[in-house]
Image (cartoon, rainbow, N blue to C red; front, side, top):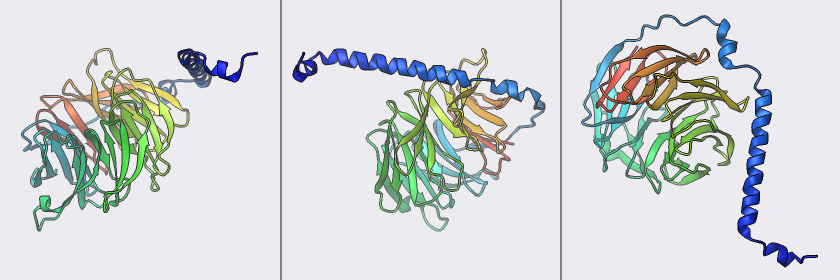
Length: 355
C-alpha cells in the first residue's frame, strides 16, 4: 500500500485537472436542476397583459456646459437637481427645470467616471481615474470645492459609487475588481467585497429601508448579489457574453436588470435564481451602457452606443419605443425619483431630460 507521502507526491497538475473536471460536472448538474424548474417563460405569462401602445415621451430640456463626454449623472432626492460628471474633469450641479448650473467643480483629474447624490441632497460624491472617492458638501453660501473630503482610495479607477441609505457611508466599485464600503466622516474602510475577477462597472442598492443588499456588475460578465454587513457574496448570475456596464434592481427588489456590451439587457430573478428575460433584437448590435426601471417596473429604459434609448416592456420583452436626440453614445440614464422624468447623458457633451 502506498504511503501518505507518496500519494501527496502525485503531480499537482493532475489533481488540479481532476478538481476542475469535478467543478465542471457540478456546474452541469446545477444547470440541469435549474432547467427542470424552467417551466414557463416570462413573456408567455405576460401574454394576457395589455399591450403598452402609446408612450408620449418627448425631449423637454437640454443641459449644455460640459466640454467633453458626460460619463455619469444622478438625480437629487429633491427631484429637481442633477449632478453630472465628465471626461473634462468637471462635476456640475444642474437645476433640471431651468437648465441653470448651480455649481461647477473642477476635479484633479479628467475622466470623472462616477458621481452620486447623498440621500439628504446636501452632499455629492465623485471620482474616477484618480482612484479616489471625494465627497463635497453643497452650500450656496460658499465655494463647494473648499468643502471637499477624500473618503476612500482604490488601487485602480473608481467606476461607480452610491450612498447606501445614509449620508454616513458610501459604497464604491472599482477597476481593481473590488467593491468597498467607506465611512464618510473618518474615511475608514468598513467592508471590502472580493469576488469579481474583472473591473467592477456598476452597483445598485436593493430597494428596502434596511438596505443591506446590493448588486454589482463586472467585466467578468458576472452579476453578484452581496450582503453589506458580512462582505459575502450571497448569489451570482451569469449569462452575458461580454462586459456588464449597468445593473439595476427591479422596484420590487426581487429581480435585477443588466445592460451589457453584448447588446442585450437581461433580467435575473433572485427567487428563481436564474435569468428570466432577455431584451434584444437582431437589429440591435450596439452595446448597452445604462439601464433603469420606471417606478412601476413595467418599463425598462436602456441607453445604447448607437445614440438611442430603447424603452422595453419588461414583462412582454418587446420594445415599446425608441428615443432619439443624442449625437453620440448614451453613457448614462436615470429615471427621476418620482418617476415623472428621465435624464440621459451622452458622449455628445450634453444631458437631456425627457418626460
